[in-house]
Length: 70
Image (cartoon, rainbow, N blue to C red; front, side, top):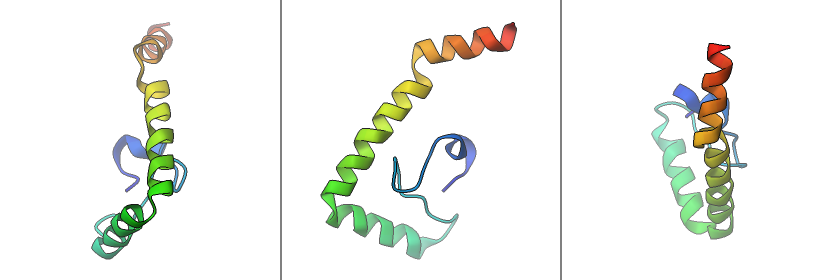
């Protein structure tokens, strides 16, 4: 779901599958989709890893702190 910090960088079918909050049917369908479509699952994993490293690296965190305190 796009809750918490996810809304800042999670993009449906780019780095994740986004589902509606507490929609168990949609969650189930998305899990089945990932299990059946390994190409999509691998693409999402690779992109998510890159996005997390970019957004949450030590360098990115230091830059955000410098901006906050300047």
